[in-house]
Image (cartoon, rainbow over all chains, first blue to last red; front, top):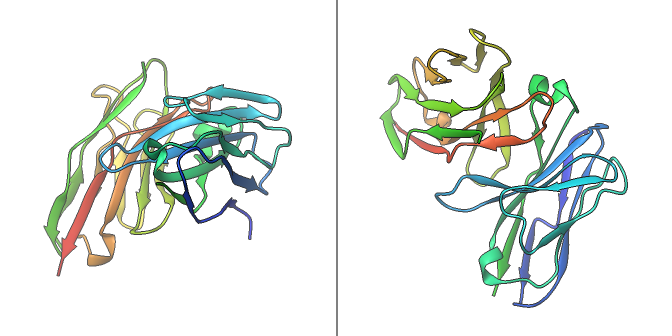
Length: 116
Length: 112
């Protein structure tokens, strides 16, 4: 089925460990984004990309790195996990240009990350 | 900057009651507006959208009208069901910019 696939669904890390959250879409979408969701704070944008090779910071980028080498994939890297990064992470994708406003974003099912 | 403000929850209603969730936005230019819904333990689903002033988005009995004069996009439903219990997010995006900006979400609980 077409959509946004996130892996893993659940992850427990120890403080200081590193890991990569995977995100892939098969809809040929130009735009991709990463959000974190915390209780009472809605969804906050971490990083986003408007095409392969182009990334930019969102509202809360510290502690996270991204790269976009292909249209399909947009991995999120935690270099040294901290308890403050315990959250639910969502990846989303959309058509580029006016398409983002016309069609909205499609979201993955999320990764629940706990840092102990 | 661009932002979205929603009424705070949680909102608790009885089945068949009328629902309104207020949403206002701050933006320059002409954003597109969205309502997303998140059911317990799931990701976000697009509920409805409007891309220009006076457009009305509708889906599953929910409606919202893009009001440029009041910078609002309030969500309404005439008769809620228990299955509508979820968190509702108002959001905006610039057609060219690509960044989707969310309000803080409003939790709705519908009791039988």
